[in-house]
Image (cartoon, rainbow, N blue to C red; front, side):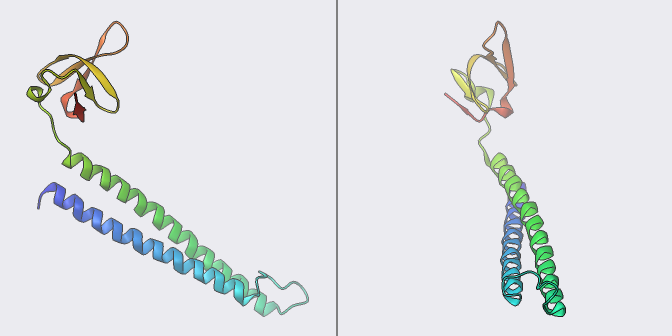
Length: 145
């Protein structure tokens, strides 16, 4: 199995776990609605009401809050992992340029476009906007004109 295939497999697993976490969030939301319905929308009945029923409502609300908090943490965790794996797959699949590809290029792009001064064997010298030039590694270049 190649590195890209392995990353895609991990990405598919992370997306499945994210979907499971989102389903857990929906379940937690339903549990809260059920707890609110149990108390008639009132979280406690006060001193004159049925204290056992009030305790049941508070317990149901606490339980639903814990489930909601856990689901939120799981969603954050798996959303982050999906984002990172998508970035790793994109990086692994992007086109790699060589010095021969960049000969004659006037501009190269890393995160922004740079004007080319000279193409070297392992790097490209670009204008810095000041009196000197900056070097960019060829591996960092994502596009050229």
